[in-house]
Image 1 (cartoon, rainbow, N blue to C red):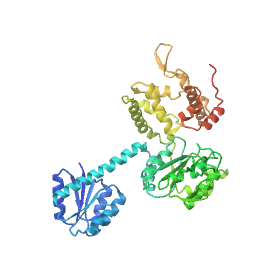
Image 2 (cartoon, rainbow, N blue to C red):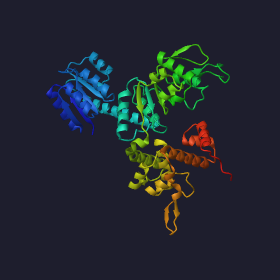
Image 3 (cartoon, one colour):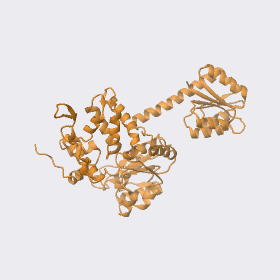
Length: 468
């Protein structure tokens, strides 16, 4: 049932409108002044507002402006006994859906209300569909850390402030950037993403600013850079800490002057871009080491949003795991499995070196390898995929089936948490390499790291392909 609010200082008009609309099965509230009406709009969710223009305390046009600033998609129908074409045009310019003169014609009133509600529904459905197409997940969790991030996004997104998002790999920095864009005034314009760590240093400037034909050996045609592609929208510079110093200097100039020049070109192009940046590095330490510009850091770090490690918000794991469980089962076309209370507790006790991304992979593995109910034994058995071939259960000496102890490391051998993290990372990479028949490119894509980083990990842990 649609919920409507009537704001009018004439009791007779309020009573008449309320009686008509309630007869049509609408839920209706009314108030006699704009100030209190505005407070109601902020406190409750209405599907439509009918607002008089000439009122005491606050003019209807002012109510319209302030209400739409707070809730841009709320349909307003303005009503007035002194209606003129100029007033109707002004109301439309300020965002009103329609304008009706007093006394209102019954049929026109009901048709206008129905159309306004239909339009509001279409706007909501369009936003939901756009979000599905863009694959923007909700930020899951209700811990203090996550609630603070959500509140910050709500405050910061509608502004033009630059935001620096920090946090470990897999913690959800990209998701925060997407929501900052979705809730911004630039949501209808493009969000262009650049992974600075994935682009060689000699090509990063061409990627960001574009190049002219013939500007270097492989420049066989003109290329438009990401700054130009994001014009009017948002540019997300992921892993900004890996950007070369020369590229940093050009990005700084673009932020200061709102102008760019393509590589090999002389013409300047004006760009209107909001920049969001993310990094898993300590940029202040990078500045000390001479790897990052302090002036660029201060330009980017107008607002800082730190995404906590999953270990710092284990109370969110049940909600996140359940969401992944439902989504993955739906994608696989299978009935949704359940996680037992013990299984959920076991998930919360894991170290989660890979954050939310690792949790997603873990849930997918449990769905594939477990029965209808995922237990704590399943979590223990499948938590360490590289721990051996006895990954499920093994037969004990008494002939009964029990969880395999070979998948559980001897925790006493680890002197500190970093030792365990290294062990877990080594076993995970080893498992993925063997699963992909030691195809390094495929494994790098599978675990979402750069191929060069994977080679470094293989060398660090002394991993070698076992001769068959």
